[in-house]
Length: 74
Image (cartoon, rainbow, N blue to C red; front, side, top):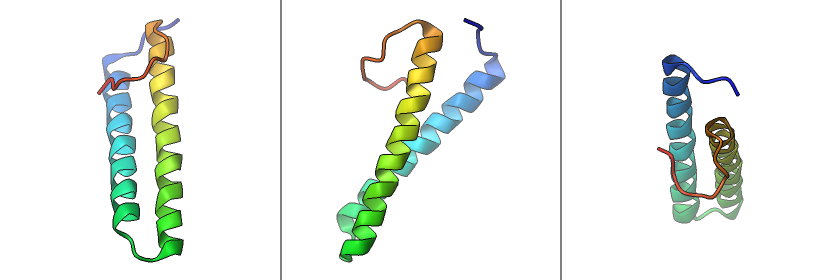
């Protein structure tokens, strides 16, 4: 499979960090929210961003020829 350029790797790293931060913030807001409807929105936001993060990590692992076995690459 084709290798990524240095610029592409930097952009991917930025995307990974942004998604990771979005998960953490959504979890924080859900944990500290009193309104049940807002809590559900924040929990769904966390799930969506975690899915994005998992997808990006899966793509990166496939490019590196590794299996998706958990752990953070960032």
